[in-house]
Length: 447
Image (cartoon, rainbow, N blue to C red; front, side, top):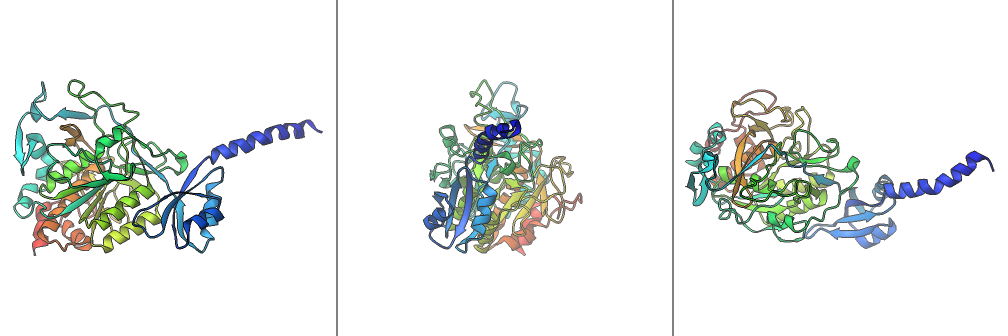
C-alpha cells in the first residue's frame, strides 16, 4: 500500500465526520398537498412543526444531509408545492452609544422631565413634540384622524404590555417563539429558543449600519441604534444575551405617536436574542389575517426573495391589509424583501432636513416614500424612552399613517393607502414619492 493511499484511508473517516458536522441540522419550510408524515418519511426528514390554521405548511428538518440535495429531492415530489430553507432571521446587537432615558425626571436629563397626557396616556413632552412630528405634519393630520378603529399588527420582538404610554392601546397578540398567547416583550428574558443556523444561509434583521451577516441571504431588522439602559435607574441587560430587547416596544411607540387611538397587536416572532425564522414570520402574518388587522408593520428585511413570505403577504393584501416594511440600512440602491414586493409599501429614511439618511437604501423602482429615521424618541420597556435611528423606525411612522387613513375610511386597502400616502413632499434622491406628509395623505383620503 502506497504512503499516499494510506494517508487517504486515514483522512477519509475524518472527512466524513466533517461533512456530517457541516450539515448537522437544517430546517425546511414546505407547503404540501399530501400527508406530511408520508412526505417526511420518503425524504428521510422529521416533522418539527405544523403551522396552525395554515393550508399544508410545515417545518421539516434533516440531519447530516446536504440541504441543497434535500431541496432538489423535495422539488421533484408532486405532493410538495414549495420548499425553501427555513432561514434564521437575526437582529444585530446593541450599539453602546445609544441612549435610553427613564420616564420620570432624572438628573441632567431635563428634556424628559415634563409628562403630559397624550390621548389619555401619560407621555414625555420630548416624545410628543419631537421634531419629526412637524416634518410629517402630524398635528394637522390629527385634526382629521387619530386612527380610531384601526388595528396595526407589529411583527417584531413583542411589546412591553405595561408601558404607561402603550398599555391602553395594546390588544392581545401572540408569541410565535413560545407558541402561546401574549406578545409581551418581557417573555424574552425567560426563554429564547430559536436555533442559529449556518451564516451562509442565515437571514438577519437590519438595525446597525454595519451588517452582521451576508446581506444577500440575511433578514435584518432595520435600526441603526438599539439603546442601553441608564445604569442608575435600571440594570443593564447582557448585550450578548439580549442584543435586541426593546425593538418591538420602540416600533410600537412610534405607531402610537402617529395614530394614538389605533390599537396595536404585538406579534412576537423575533426574540430578544435577535432571532426568528421565516416560518415564524409567515405564521405571524397568517395570524394577523385571521384576526382581521388593518395594517402590518415589518421593520425587517432579507436580501433574497422568499416564496413563502411572498405568498403570505399576497394573502394579506387580498384580505384588505395594508403592508408596510423598511427599506433597509445598506446605504445602497438595492431591493430587499418584504419591502420590495409590489404589494408592500417600501419605506426609506430621512433626517429632519429632508435629506436621505446615509444608511438608508434607496431606488425609486422599490422605495415608495421616506420618513424621518434619525434621532427619534420612542418608548422602551420598563417605562423608559429611547432615542434611536434607522429605517426600522421610519416604517412605523408610515404604518401609523396608514392607520390614520383607516380611521377615515375603514374600507381603505393597500392600493388606496399607497396612493394616498404618495401625496408626500417631493425631495428626489430616489426616494419614491418623497417624504411622508400625513396631512396631505389624510386630505387625499377624504376626497
